[in-house]
Image (cartoon, rainbow, N blue to C red; front, side):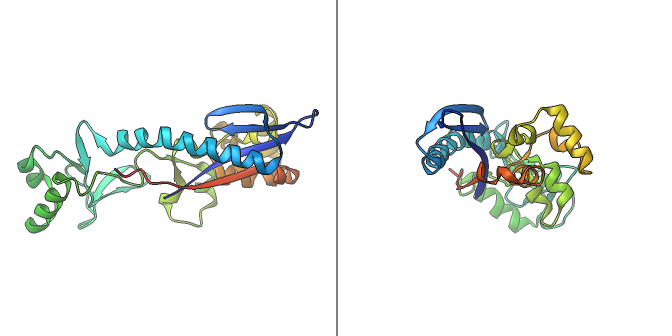
Length: 224
């Protein structure tokens, strides 16, 4: 699975290289010897942050009160309703399987009897640990407005977001005025947007930031 983080690399008046991170929000002066070294430092920092925060986050979302998410469930957006892959109907169990209550699962599941046995056995024998690609992600309003991809890709993990006003180095109020002048939505600054969108929108406003802003991409796996 690919995740992304935005960083900003600036050179101070003292010619020191400064790094700005958006998740967590952090500015490090004298962070590196040059831009290449700064990217290396940033990549290591972001990777450590994602690994440290990502696994507990996924573990929190994949289980709810000891229940495990059904591998045959999917979330219908934007209403966040769990539905059955077999019937496309709302799931009576909201895709939650209690491995200690097989009777309750069988009573509530839409699948055919032989398929129910396979699903329950898969979960109970820990061949599937409940990971889903939607729960625990949040909507990027810029992705939603721009479209052009599957709706599920409008949603991102917390560490993938960044603030547009911080990216362009302007105040919140000034950024709102700039967006209004460019006929862009004010919610691009009133809430965080994903790293890729923040990078793209920042360059629309200030093309000279191309050398300072960089989207780092990471291949991660949070499965047990």
